[in-house]
Amino acid sequence: MIKKSLTNLAIAATLATAGTAAFADCGDVQIAEMNWASAELMANVDKIILENGYGCNVELVPGATMTSFASMNEKGQPDVAPELWINAVRDPLNAAMDEGRLHSTNAGPITQLGEGWWVTPAFQAAHPELDTVVKILERPDLFPDAEDPSKGAFIGCPAGWGCQLANANLFRAFDMEAKGWTLVDPGSAAGLDGSIAKAGDRGENWFGYYWSPTAMVGKYGLIPIDFGVPFAGTDNWDGCIVKAEQDCADPQASAWTVSEVHTIITDSLKNKGGIAVDYLEARTYPGPIMNAMLVYMGEEQAGGEDAAIEFLMQHEDLWSSWVSADAAAKIKAGL
Image (cartoon, rainbow, N blue to C red; front, side):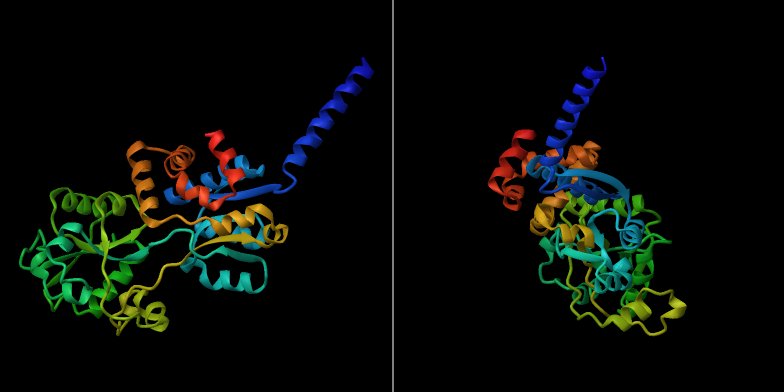
């Protein structure tokens, strides 16, 4: 009986060794599954590709911008934040990168992203000549406010959102009240989305704040508008535009600050190198495809794992360019 148990243990050990060998080239990788749809999708696509294509052992852990960054910076885990919006952590992230704790392995994992002011396709089709914010501000009559149709409605952020301050200060910087505009508080995320959906479904004009990648941009084809003025500098933006009105006495008209999203990895993963780092450097989602996936997630109530499978099935031409031909065959076979 003892001999049989020892034999079983030997077999188990052999199998474990074989399993470990399968992961030898990549090893264990811990990825933050951050708490918004595009980041959930990216984390799950990364998991499937790295496990099925390259034999990595991937663990997804719950994450968010601040908590994932703090954990990576202080504890060295998780290994990867697939979609870190760095404006929220720019100074401490720069310090961590300067000191070698963290690294940006991909400075553009999603294209055509960012915050700013947007219009509906119906407006652009009817008025292609009004192609900047500066030009649009001369025509408040094209966006009548429901409460006072003699005024133009600019849809800002709900009270309490960080972007509320920036929109309010830019409203003052562009002297929009004197030009006949009202800054509309949509009341909530649902109110903001509802205003877009109403205009989009009816083919009406809409002008306001939004961001991408999002399902609303994908579903309604919102178009970002060039401000018609340059970015007026970080002193104006960080020292005034994003602050409360009492702390921003003289806001200067400015384009929206550039949003930056990076894939951030820990120093331990970078030092290991290997296929996981090569893959993360290679993969980039075009904005329109990401927005379309977010529409799918919203309409189908799909979580990150289901959405990742849908993405891999529908966009083989894209993701196969991120991996080797051998890995692509393994990934496809596993779907």
